[in-house]
Length: 60
Image 1: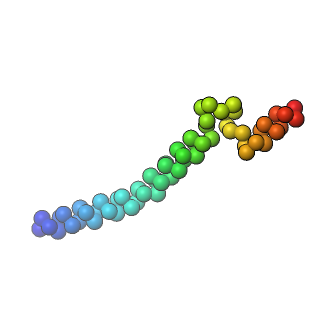
Image 2: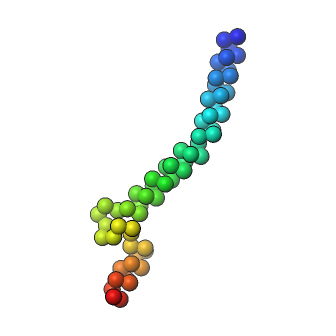
Image 3: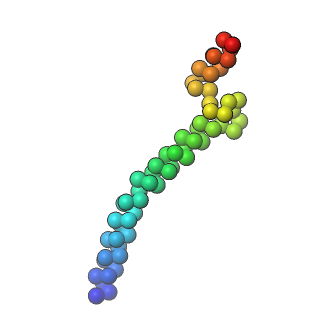
């Protein structure tokens, strides 16, 4: 009885962890993208758009 209970708990934990895996990955990806977009030492809050923002500022 105890062995079956342990096997069931392990099975249940695997199912829960697999169900939560996409949420964890999405959270990690969002934080990585946010870190690139919001550079605390940058001139612009939302980035330079691969140089396009500086080019537009130079044109007036």
